[in-house]
Length: 69
Figure 1: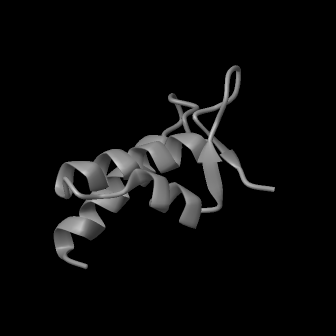
Figure 2 (figure 1 turned 120 degrees about the vertical axis):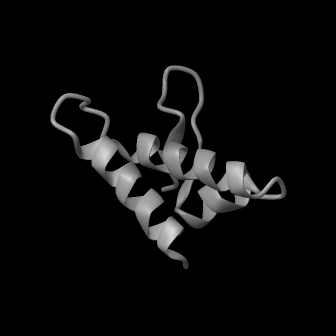
């Protein structure tokens, strides 16, 4: 990993944990990393990454990603 990677990771964590956003959820964290990785690599496979994290795409009335049981 490079300095840029560490800085971007810190930015994501800082955003998600800021007091005013209330955004620190598993689904939001995964979504932020997916967005970043896709912007860095057009061949990034969102499905494989989400599955490797132990999640799957959510259905109706669920968060974007749900934990695989």
